Image 1 (cartoon, helix red, strand yellow):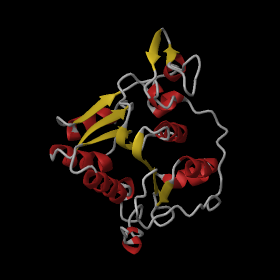
Image 2 (cartoon, rainbow, N blue to C red):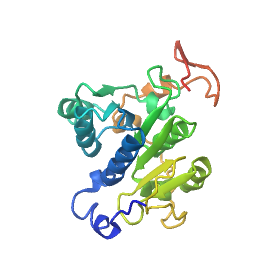
Image 3 (cartoon, rainbow, N blue to C red):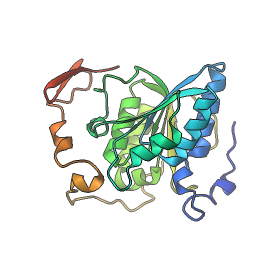
Length: 252
């Protein structure tokens, strides 16, 4: 069994400014685990929401040829221009970062024509808890070997039902919360053989229900853009979906 040093990891997070990289030990472990299991073959990784913590690491391993990564982002509003910054800092031949319509996140993405049918790892660190849940639901249909979700403490608070759902849809679930804040959930049908087994804690944070409607313009995407791109229907196992004037084949 791989034994993470919980005492050492517990000292990271918000107190010492490593909060946005608290997923790094688990991301590195997942990559090394699968890279060895695959006999040194290049991994295929999907990054749902870019950031410095994952970007630094993905830039390193893609330059080494250990993986090819597609990082998708939808935030690029001045003055932050997040997408531009991430692309300039980290993109290389094996690490492509693209700016996508935010509907790709809201709808959980089985509709995106460029998605591969299967990934080794899907890493989820996009904004919006519904978006994160959608990506995990997408991953749960056999579309990746390991799915990793950063900020798992918010799932305990905002989406407590999700914790039960993920244990029913993956054979092995691991969660670094509450040892580390922010936490990281990683799930797989493969036994990852480490000491962060999910303890089925579902009532350890006060549940918050968000009732106030959020103006999408304040979150970095144009007003009504998300509404214009909602599908007319959201089938679980259909073959095509119409978005606006276009019809896309669903990738399985």
